Amino acid sequence: MADHEKDQVRQTKYDGIEEYDNQLPTWWKITFYITLVFGFFYWMFYYTFDQGRSQKELLEKAQASYQEKVERLAPKIDQVDFAALSQDAVILTQGHEVFESYCKSCHGDHAQGLIGPNLTDEYWIHGGEPREIVEIIEKGVIEKGMTPWKGVLSSTDIYHVVAYVLSLEGSEPSNAKAPQGEKYIRKP
Image (cartoon, rainbow, N blue to C red; front, top):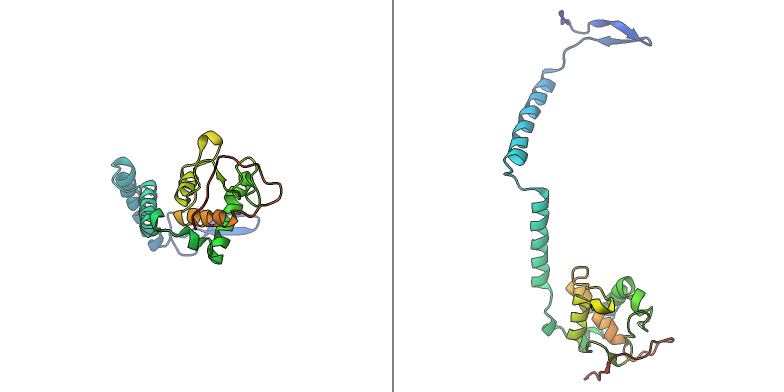
């Protein structure tokens, strides 16, 4: 490339295709050099001196912020009126969807009990108060094989599924599992 005349054709030909021997546009070269300089400093800043925030740190910060917001906005267990929630059709529909997704495999289609206990009778193994049911769902019962759902389900989803389960009490589904635990009479 001793002679840099514009549109100079190279001597080589491949399959009848000729190539020009032109220089790259100046703005391409400048962009390339700027990218090299930027890449060098980026590498030094993030990888050599470890000064920048990693994506993992950004994700953890965003998740913590989201969790704080959810906990702040979610109603506290003492403030929830489960009797009223179990009468609300929208809440029951949402609770049913959560039950279908997460609870049905152990408690059955109609909460009649499979490997998990029957949730439609008056007998409760770990307490029948709504706050006790919420605690069971959140913390699980590892010795009985129930997984903790606190990290999987939001507080609102847990409250909705508790309202749904309370609405099923006394429904007497077919093939219901025998009563387990102590009889609990719910106060009106």
